[in-house]
Image 1: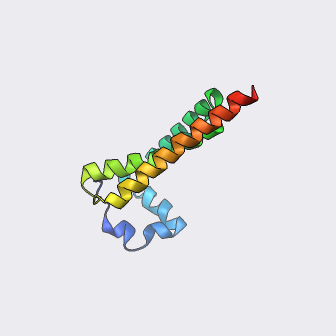
Image 2: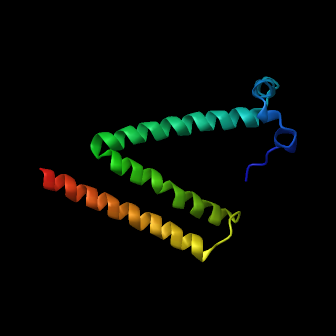
Length: 114
């Protein structure tokens, strides 16, 4: 886990926009690293989304983005910061199954149009 100084989150420094820039100006490498990670991850997400849409379809892009949810849940289960729940597991399986079914039906509809 990444430890965040409580002075940053408990005193509300990041809730005021001008204080964020002051915090960056003081050389807070943690905050600057988080901002850079967010920018790189957002750019990579946009790039991969465009590649998926170019080669597949918007439905496939949405399906891939929905599958991020179970992946994040599994990551936090592995880290030990999330409690296992059968209800959540069933929900994740339902999301995955419904997404895959929707993609399959969409492909069949596209093939029938041709």
